[in-house]
Length: 208
Image 1 (cartoon, helix red, strand yellow):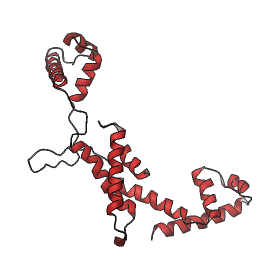
Image 2 (tube, rainbow, N blue to C red):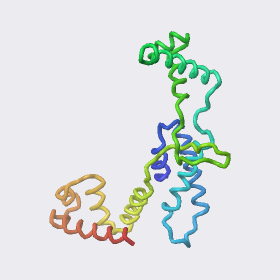
Image 3 (tube, one colour):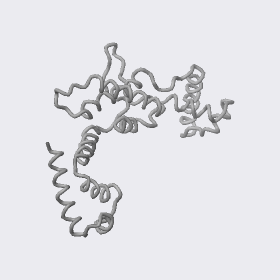
Image 4 (cartoon, rainbow, N blue to C red):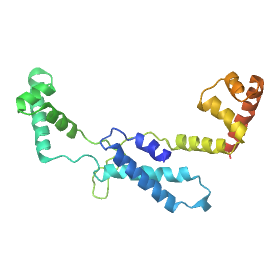
């Protein structure tokens, strides 16, 4: 589920509620679980990542973003016309309050109309079979980063309990070697030497 949240956070604030993003991501995770083939010798996270991202992106392609009513479209059109006239005459657009007063509506509706008139961002810059542009949201390629984090977690879990405690205190609770030594009834030198060996073990496990 952490992988689902990591994917959803990349789309937060892009026009779809987080709950919808999480629901789609969870569906992708379920599909990945059902279709995962262990015989391919892939890490599950490597397989699941594109499946989860695909379900989230589908929301944007299928119009998961907020639907715009006809009245809001008409208001957006009126705003555009007025702002164009103002720019030609005065060199600047009207403020939200000026637009609300001129069009006889509330500032909230003006803001909604302005937001509805923004073009969706292109994910793929490709077109479907009917020649319509694909709608998507640009995201960083985080698959490698997520895979590395998950590999690190898996490597840590395979350590002996005493070694896990050292890593937990040093890198999860940000304790110094001296503080770690005091908690574990060790010397600072012992912690330093053991920590160096543990990091070597983790690097070796992550490179397999």
